[in-house]
Length: 463
Image (cartoon, rainbow, N blue to C red; front, side):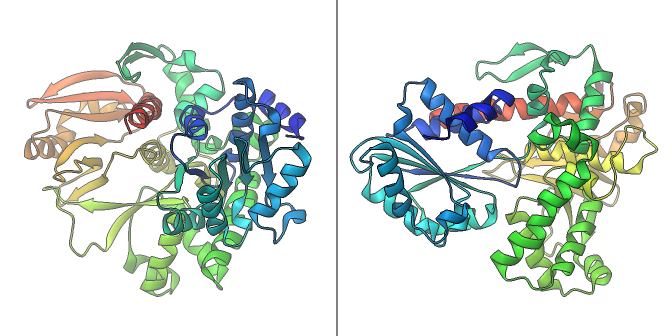
């Protein structure tokens, strides 16, 4: 490990993301012979997490000579195989990697052709090496990892920042008091005496809070559009996806993504998209699949009042995985109800907290007389497990009759309670035998992000 100063500088400036608590045990674990594939969208902190991991390994007593880091996208390494790179490490450190336990990190692995085949060979032949690879071309990494790495690779998705992580990295956790913690470490009860301050941070999170660099750099916060659009969106749309899938009409791809981003949290139909873009149905379907594979969007399917999915569903909702993407393309939102974008971006932010969960089947319900924004189905029988209606207003706790469609849905599916998010109001009411739990959206998003990480830690230990 020669570039120790780089690792120290990055780690001193930036605190580790809470997802580090999930990632580090996978790197440490040698009981199962597997490489770790760290994937995720651009600029979410994968390289920084690797440096934090290296620093922690050294703090835990690992000899720095037994740790090696390569940035595979460096021009010097073009065309070289992984074993060729390991020969450089062996010469520089004087370590026989074939017999000595060591940790080897290959950053931006997608720049190496057939990387998955090279990596599988290393895992099979050299049990002494614990390999960790990362890359921003998340779609290709995930595809090739599944195709070639079955039983040899462990995928780890690092998502954009959750609202909990955003608050954590800004050292503002005092805005929420954790009144009761469960045996699993999750929040069961909480309080917030500074809801206006928390809401201000929530709006900032919506506008630029999905990326660690954006929240820690004053220059980026001053012009998030330039950073997010030019360094993230454009590189994915103009370089990553065209090179991965052989797309020739980049303008067509960019136009469709801009349309979907503008309508995040809104219902769209294939016919509508075809008419607006003059692109064929099959091409639009492929492009949407590419956007999902690149972790730019998530498609959520519609169910009816009986929780049945339509056999020929032409309408669906599209959510950005990170609300900051829309603000970068268009303009930041503010907290005023008059701003029509605030409602859809609040809903997008809430959905983006749940997208990191491995145990949810998210849908939305719409029928002739009503709609519910978020419905989770049980995996075993596809029955309704819970539901959330997303609002950025406090009026509904005083106008319960406007929630009749939600009450009817709860009665139809034997739900004893339902969550309704608000702007500042936090209370519980009983209406027609259904418990209505009103909770500020910002608190809800914080608690979901916090609890998902804690539950992932528990599930990881169990598995």
